[in-house]
Length: 217
Image (cartoon, rainbow, N blue to C red; front, side, top):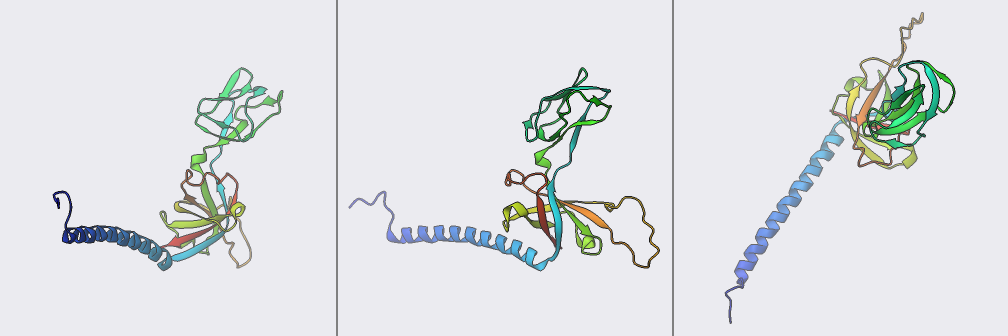
């Protein structure tokens, strides 16, 4: 019998053990990583924010000089590249400065427009964040940049999304100082923003209502 290109039984068993050890080691590493992540979440504190939304900063496009609104070339929901024309005020063509999504357009053709008056509003979808509003007495001091979060969006029921805190507002949402003659101090609210992978969650849209859970360390 020719056995030049065949392995003996002991060699086969040795090779099988080696493969199982490699596979087993990889599986152990995966399980260990998952265990560490679960431990970090379970062992951390949790701050819940019921009032949150998915949103991105507005980009306002306006004219630099007064004039008549002669044309609007876009509609709400349009996705445009950078340097695309959106409106004509007098002889000035308004253009996008970056790629984005149109969220509002002034269609009052013939109206007089003042300098700086917004004609078109747009957002950059890659800058979407989940933004929560939290009372200063309900865990704000525990939250840090980089804390992991989970969140749900009303439109998708109990489905859970994930992200990470990347901004905590330095000032409260209340404008100005309110003087109160009572002994009870007014509780201030602060915005907390978390980024998420917009390419992984393309179904999330500007303005959607959400709830957040922040895992503090």
